[in-house]
Image 1 (cartoon, rainbow, N blue to C red):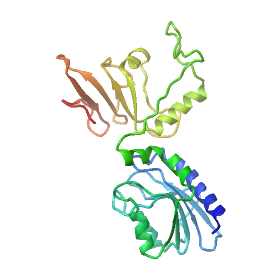
Image 2: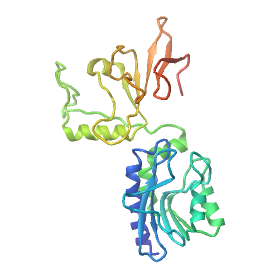
Image 3: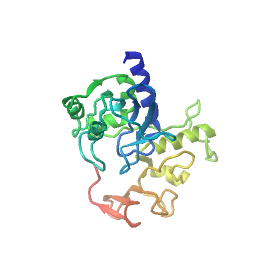
Image 4: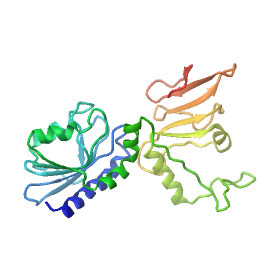
Length: 272
């Protein structure tokens, strides 16, 4: 298959991965294109929600006859068991002939092992097609896996003269509806959103996702906040963590979690 056609197919897989970014966490958002052996049929899919099948095809597609097909995937297929069996095992069981990979997965459980297993089984594997584009799309995941640190984005709305609100505090927003929708999509793509307690006291934000598909992130507040602040959980469907202080001034980490009964958990040391 010529290089131009490979790049076109890999970019289609990359486009398919965008929808997965809203549902795949904590797994990476991976896109895939399957081209049948005769080239007559093309199927696009992406990572499903955790615990679901490894790949969910786009609406209207049925699982293809994959024997001798070529599979284009943005990230190296995993060789290990997690919530689902290894992707490599599924590809080998399907009898694919070629796998074209955008970039290797730096996760210590993968780290090139997926490609090695495919090649050892006789599958033709090409790595590095559209790699710069794939690595840009997967930058948050790749940074966390290579450094152990999160990918941090600053969301800031400011006027041309550098202001973030009206002097008398009467401005609810200084942005328009499109910008606010972008903020909600950014929240949906994030695992956590962090603000200072001053923002909570002055604006009383919910920090949830409402104007975009996707789940609300963990909400983290630095500092003491009112007991009825909107950011605090009202049901098991949200999660909030916050820094607060004891009466003696010692800092503790207070966590509200959707995974347990609503309540307060404390730790004498902050998380890393």
